[in-house]
Length: 485
Image (tube, rainbow, N blue to C red; front, top):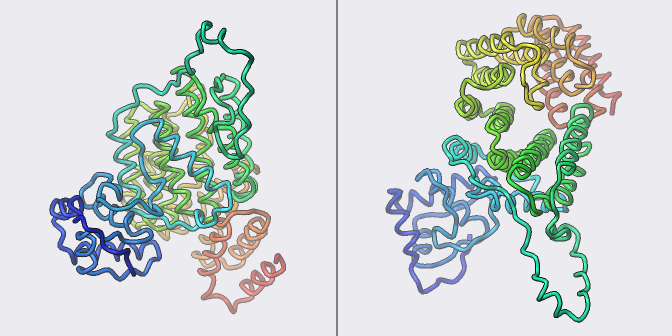
């Protein structure tokens, strides 16, 4: 790596933080190189490189952001490149910040929307980083609630001043596409928020049936062109809280659809920002749901320990006052994380808590709209996944079959996942014919969707099928799948 010509001023900010962190120059360089590997970067810094930074040279590219993250992990507080006396650069951690104020949160998330709605393909290639889960979840749990989110209208021009105008001033020309200022001072109404909620339901339905890739870009453009102007409009306190809640829900959905197409780093950033918007909304319960979503992504990517922590933070954040359905959802998410780690006792205990919580639910309970999907079919699905991960195949098959019996056809992707779980269980029980028939049906459904997760579920089954590749049912499965392409 080459660096810019040296500056004359030593970097005392960096020196002070190195001393506070207890790093040696070689130790700091090693940590920067290791962090770079997490993001697919082959860095070759050493103690001499750090000496040059201390003398005032500026590292190139994403390195300042990586150095800042090394110190963030070590010292337990968010630090930026500027805090280290380094130039701002392409921020590999942009979007993982848990904003200090609602205004800052709007700036961060609207920046994500604008970049994602354009042709910034590199944004969808950003790597997922487990370390990026720590600070936001901690700040959500212990952070102070926002005192105010209302935005007052700009002061009106006094009549005396207006009288001095010779003629009305022409309106300013419209801004270029993508600028929220094109509707200055827009007063947000209840109808606006109802529209945001309706759009969320529409995109949720499309995602469930056709996969996240089907309408993801349309959702992001809607956030940029409709939601951002509202957030930058004017509203009173009550309306503002509802607006931030609706924006949090749409942002979480943008993350969910990004996750479904395997844009995992981008999805992670959307989830973090949805968590911050939920805090501005004053909706602690929805924040727990965002954390559960983050936990599910961590499970999918094999980061079980982080997934357990996220589920537990969600539980701690809402306490025991949440509706039974919400409690069931939170415990089931913890169970999935223990399952992927192979922790039988902890997984079983969490499943029992989830089952008891759902049994305690009663008709007429005040259940949040986002938790209504968690019913007996979903709980059976959670049991099936957990038992599959623990290689308890008979139990996995029983629960997967029950989930498929109860689950509505509109949840097409969830049914596909459950069918693969059932196929895997049948395979584990030595029932090769049934396993291949179920998997072939799921593969056909996956071909009709735009979902990387659906494809990965099918591929996971195929990897498990490999030891039986010469058996007649396996050959028949391959022929059926080949005919789909």
